[in-house]
Image (cartoon, rainbow, N blue to C red; front, top):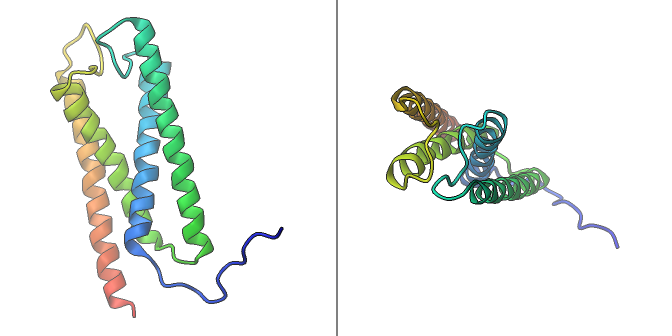
Length: 159
């Protein structure tokens, strides 16, 4: 059985879908960076540190599984946009930065401070770590918003 043929004519770019796919990939990449660098390489924390080390490792495994599923889903959706010739690259890149920043800010504010699932480090003053974590997330989010605004202006000018 042959796979379905791609559309015969070029589709119109789909900016919102491109941005959403980019945001999914960006959030998954930031989760991977957090998991790999801070959980596994540096051993600074687990995703859930309010129980035993075994539960902490289990929570890291669940986070790692979720980020991998999000990456696979994101790249399948990206491939579908490419197959349809509907990818809006500028919107997709804006989405990637928005996803990176949104994940980091959510982790820093909700997971670290509101839910207290974990802290960046233990046994030290976490204030500089919290500021660095959240400011980096905010800068990524602002860069994504700037790219999204530029992409929207450009697509309005293009017929």
